[in-house]
Length: 428
Ligand code: DLL
Image 1 (spheres, rainbow, N blue to C red):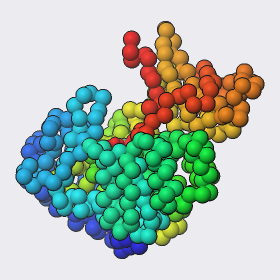
Image 2 (image 1 turned 135 degrees about the vertical axis):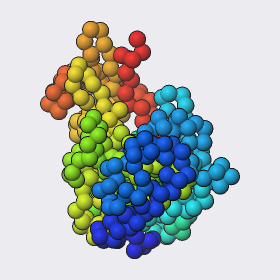
Image 3 (image 1 turned 120 degrees about the horizontal axis):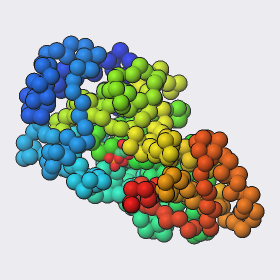
Image 4 (image 1 turned 180 degrees about the vertical axis):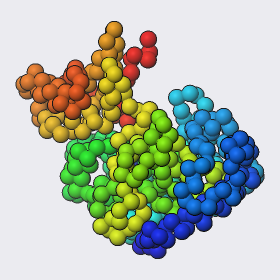
């Protein structure tokens, strides 16, 4: 098992390491990052005020906008000459969020990703097909470095070219597939089209993340491919993939708490919430050299569970991520998460896996859900089916949705993160 000791640290050991590292990191950050020094000074805080873990609540938050304000090289505690790599994610504002790494950071990240594979049950004997995007996106290189660090064989197919993807999977005998859950769903469809029987493949584990996905989608992927579908969380600001992963119990994602200090807060009042309460995840990176983020506001909403897992690990678990506070749709005053709609749609057998949410407004907001019917049910009693879907959505969302059933294969597929929502209200 890779980094077995780190995977099985006890809660006391984790807390001790966290405090030691937090003190050091706060000192380094104050000394080397002008933005933090200014904020500490303005708030009248000194690094020596951090005496115990709960003192973290004295520190200022860091926001995505802080990274954009420091474009292009971002918040940095080392000179550019010491950087070894950058990644970037494109935002809606047009200014990319750039993140930077020293060679030690890349080493830490590789270890974290290798630990994730290992925790999910992947070993050095596996053949890992990596279908995440290589490039500025952290998915491709993150999964790649981790696979190499683990000592496995990595097949860097990257995104797209689904036919070649399937050919490699068959010919090489890939045992692990890494991609977004929405691409996995598309792969399943493509296997059927190509006439490939999943039982002829050697796949045994899938490592899926980069977007929210439902328990129903997990069942679909697991049963169609006959694999274990593991959830993995990360974001570019926190190295990339590798922050948290499910163990074989599939009962929450273990956050590697010796590297990431997690808090949950009420996004409106900014108050720190007790464990077990749903809130916005806020992360402090405990050892990152190049871009040491303190109390980074992720906007991802989740519940954290500090109870020891049945697998024996004590790293706290983030229970399935419902979505981001900025993904939440407000339709006629009602809060709706796209993942709630996904849950409902995926639980109805007659429907396919692809859907789109279209929001429109005249004076009132309208929630339209376009969903594909499964090939076996297309053209059969559609009115009855549409009524059934509308009723199921109303029961969960407490909101009326207009359902449009469409033919299998008509909603555009994506190779990376799925685009589920078209908000025409913003286009007026
Ligand atoms: O998506 C890094 C990554 C790559 C994670 C591959 C996992 C696999 P960003 O592009 O910066 O980085 O997007 C980060 O994606 O704040 C979440 O909202 C969402 N996200 C990532 N993983 C999950 C997950 C990568 N397992 C943003 N479940 C995050 C739900 C996820 N949402």
